[in-house]
Amino acid sequence: MADAAVGVDIGGTNIRAALISAKGEILAKLSERTPTDPLLVLERVIALARELDAPEVLGIGVGIPGRVDVASREILSGGIINLAGLDFVKRLESALGKPVVIENDCSMALIAEMKTGGAKGYRNVAMLTIGTGIGGAVAHAGRIYHGHRTAGQLGHICVSSDGPPCPCGRRGCVETFSSGTALRRHIAEAGLPATTIRDVLDMAAEGNEAAVCVLRQWAMPLRIALDNIAATMDPEIILLGGGLGCDAARALADLPAAAPWFCPPILPAKLADDAGVIGAGLSIFDAHVSSQGKRVVLVNGVPASGKSRLAKALSQRAGWPILSLDGIKNPFLQHIGPVDRDFNRTLGKASYQAIWSFIAEAPAGSTFIIDAWFGFQPKAQLEAYIDAAKIEHVAELWCKVPGSVAGERYASRLEDRLPGHPGAEYVPELIALADRAEPMGCGAVMTVDQTQEPDIEAVLSWLSHVFDGE
Image 1 (tube, rainbow, N blue to C red):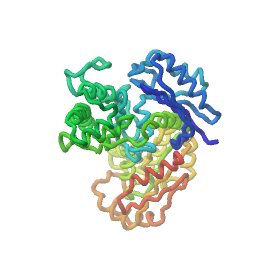
Image 2 (cartoon, rainbow, N blue to C red):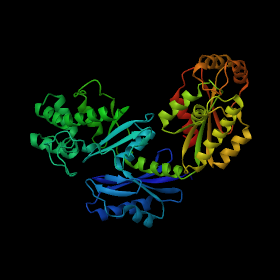
Image 3 (tube, one colour):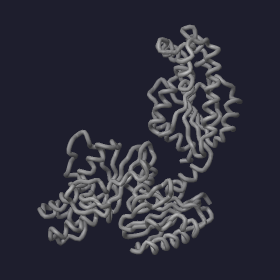
Image 4 (cartoon, helix red, strand yellow):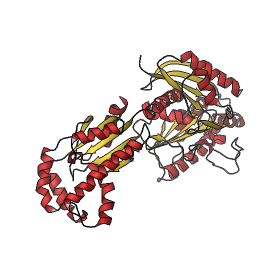
């Protein structure tokens, strides 16, 4: 059977656990009420994980309500359920005998939404989960952003300095106005007979003034928080998840952004209550990949093929670092002064070796983009470097361009080239080279037509298939 993981989501009302595939599919699912005693919560998490455990399970991911230091695997403080001080990870690993990954519960939900839900295809996303409280998470360049340790506590954005006290120690956090707990307070204070947010929404749609007032009290502070998120983080989209996410999105429809500068799409999450367990399970696969071999993307093409532009665009989208042959070589050319073509080529060989030496020293799980014309060295040399650096996955983006186009581009940039680079006399040679050049073929190859604007989303989709089998 294919590898699987156990994902656990500890909510204020329920503990959910599921067996998750590498694609984010739920293979089995369990749920029970959340005890109020933190030790009982730990015991129930262990029991649920044991019930779902199987030989193919790689580990257990757990979404924690509260602040989590992912690097040290420490729970710093709790929300509705405070699990800080329990030595949670050590106890879980001791009881289950498998690796455990912990993360803030909203971050786990965002991992799932970016993999298979409402944020699929986006790289820069903010998410709020609205339930008993309000959780928050931020993704930058496709990865959860942790800041110093615990970035993303979006439920604690202050929207009123003289608002209700918050468990975090401040007053007026958006959680105190726009959570499910706050909504129940607004409904009770208005004297409405409504028992659910759907009742309030229906009453407001029928023109009930008290219901309209409740919705504004509940949604306006959330709108203020979202405007602040948009202004400070500039996400591509903002997702609203949790049990009340869809209802909040509906309530916000009548409350437009305060200014046109700050209005990214605000969308309901798609995975509902399953997001937390799916993301928790997927976190195990991410950790498993990180413990495996390294990956490289060879952005390969002759000079003036547009490879550097493609490499930079890919790096900006994926968040992977670029190692460029010219990026290493050119500073030396600037300081050494005029050199001939032979010296330039020797310096290129040394720079090529430096790139692979750097990758060889990098930790397992690293991914690099290498921007170079790989054909200037024998294929056997490239294969030796790949083997020495312990590269597990190689993907090559072949930047294809007609010789006439490469020659024209090269000639147009002669004034910008440093001494040591060939001059106008190289153009006929480059045209012939471009017309006969081929990819190195040391791994999967995608040909990119560099006479057109590259489709970075298509490139990313292909790389996901090569690296992750998606």
